Length: 388
Image 1: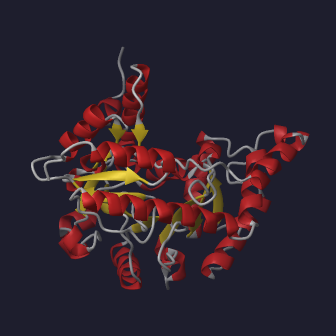
Image 2: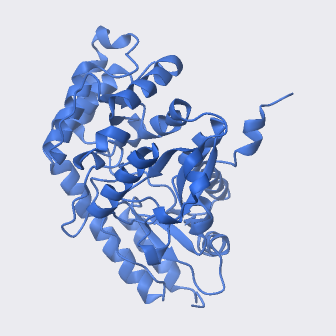
């Protein structure tokens, strides 16, 4: 059979491959501790699930939803942005809902890129930025995120010939996988860079609500001129433990929102309305759910870092996000250390090079692993010599 050429260009999806490895190991009877995928182990709060139960009984919600989301949900998103970031958004033209942020990130490539265009993509990065670009027939120019630059892209290092062909730039802070954060100076520089070069800025802010040590992450929409050139993707998955319900949003520039809506309305039928009511319930609630989650993740962060440092591993405490970005021991690559942990200790982590070439030399650990499994992993690490 003849399969499209673009399929052969796309590498296997990182987290799908990790899931397959976990299932294979478990089928062999092995007790796997999984630090691989950032999927909250904390259940969705009851009041949010109750909204689904109630609305699922309403026949109005048994029909096709609108691709851009119910007006009530778009208004709830706009109100949340006002409350959280003091940003004013027009729910009718600057806000749409998504079937999870991943869906919007993937569809954005079809809205903004043509074959031959270039997307500026951070390296390492959430894999959908590059995969969406390639599906759209465009190319990626990877911007290395390295520790000496605080895991921020060096805009001055992008060649002029690349800039001329670039249509979009992806940024993601708090960052997955590095845990890095960006300051006001960076956001202002990115916005000015986009305006000067007519490059759309796509900000993935999925981790903005999981922050530690008094840090509060900004929205790019807080900064002057942001709406002239950018849109921002968000998600309820991490803050409200709703990964399985697939609720996201995108806000910002009206023309860009309209283009993305055109793609969505032709390719999907929107988020089920009963689930949209879950989202409204979450967004209209107080901040107690998020605060409780942060305390859980902070405790796990601190416990893991203190243990890993005793083994000689180099770990920086992130101020945001759900991940630890850890340098591998001397003599190991990202892949070899990942393999060592799986084969010898039944511990699953994500190799840093799975996020891009600049991720080589690191592994990523998720904080969404239950406390009991964290202790189990620490005991296993204590039982071996890591040769560090």
